[in-house]
Structures are given as C-alpha cells and as structure tokens.
Length: 291
Image 1 (tube, rainbow, N blue to C red):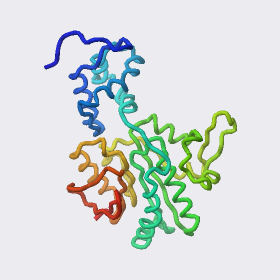
Image 2 (cartoon, rainbow, N blue to C red):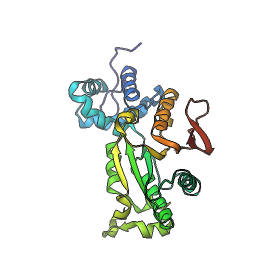
Image 3 (cartoon, rainbow, N blue to C red):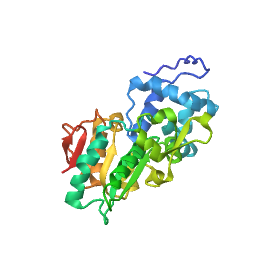
Image 4 (cartoon, rainbow, N blue to C red):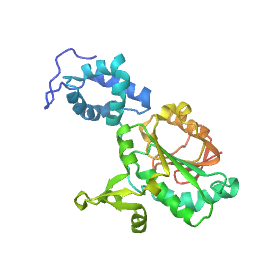
C-alpha cells in the first residue's frame, strides 16, 4: 500500500519517486513504446527524469505525471520522455559477423533467387532502432564496397528510431574520431572527412554515403501504420530485449509482414526466437529467414 507520509527529498531537492508514480510511468512507457520497465528499473527512471523535472521547474514526480497525462503535456512531453527513457548504445561494425553474412551469404541468395539489387529491383534494407546512426552508416559503407564489384547493383537504406535526439545525431553524420575506431582504415579514407578545425577531433561521412540513407522517427509499436515499404533485409539488433515476450512476438510478426518472401531478419546476440510463433527459420547465429 502506498504510504501517505511525506517522502524525503533527494540530494538535489526533488522528492523521490513513489512506487505509485513509477508504476504509472512504467505502464505508460510499455503501452506506448513497448519498453518494459520492471520495478528494479525505478532508480534508473528516476535518475533519467530528474534533470527534466528541473528543466520544467517541478518539485516532484507526481507533478510530472499530472503534466504528462494532461491534454497539453501528453503529445509534447512524450517525445521528451522517450529521449530520456530509451537506451541508445551502439557502435560502428557492432557484431561485425552480421555484415559479413549479409554480403557473403544473404546477398548472393537474394540476387540469385529474386534478382534483388540488379538493375530493376534495388535491395531495400531497414535499420530498425538505428540509434545515432552507426549501424546504417556501417551498412552503407559495406554495401557500397560490395556494389563497386557488382555492376548494376543498387540499394537503399531506411533507418528509424523512436528518439528524435539520437536521430538528429544520425542525420548530421558527425562523430568523434575515437568513435570510428572500429571502421577499417581503408573505409575511413574513402568515406569520412576530418573537421577543418583539428581541435574538434571530429569526422563526417561524405555526402555519397549520407545520401544512401533515409532517417525517420518510428514507433515500432505502430509500424503497420507508419511503414509502407516491404524490405529484403531488416536489422533490429539489441532492441527487442527491452520488450516483454508477448510484445516481442507481436513485433516479430509485424516485421515478417514487412519482409519479402525469403527476406532476412538480423537480431542481437541475446535475442533468440525459440518457442515463438513467428514465420522465421534460423540460418546463422541471430540471423533468420522468412519462411
């Protein structure tokens, strides 16, 4: 039972989040974006929202809840909230074996069976949960290298995320030099430009690579309404781990509807589909093909 005793303030003067407020917020997050926040994530959520409350000049999380669920705050604040709640860890060439499989196994199969990428039908790839852009830019470099040796091969990349904040980084395509360490030197020379101001230690992808990717803000819970395309390959890695099993199964079936026959789905290293009612078969570690 929720106590009515006055809650102690945190070190920054804010009253700590009550369990009732946490449950209301976590239910909203799961119903809206599919992200599961069990009770052991209470301190994390409290910490991530603390600065936002200060920006809004709010003294406690109850006031924040009242604002979030008001007609004025619902649409406006939901966008701010998801930027803080979502986890956006990513790297260039993360789980690099997937990119090797894409060009060495998946593409020859798609081209041989469906003539994908050859003159008439460009290969269509979706990076779902692209975060700050490292995954789709890795795709763009890898596929550009592949296309150099495959006359007539064409492709397009669609990249989406729920967070507008990380999408802005992705669209700008500017990264700290330390961030690009996993990118092979040959590709760095070909596809990245250094900042004229050497003190910034930043690089930016050349327009040739940037123009290959279309970025969009998408809620994966609403892809039936928000995504019109059908793809040959979908990467959704290290995303569904934040959903409960029932939501995972629903989403995976939605991905199946957005994949062409024989299309490929790439998941993260801990996102197995065992026991789920989904139309995929495993073809490699965390690589699945639509049945």
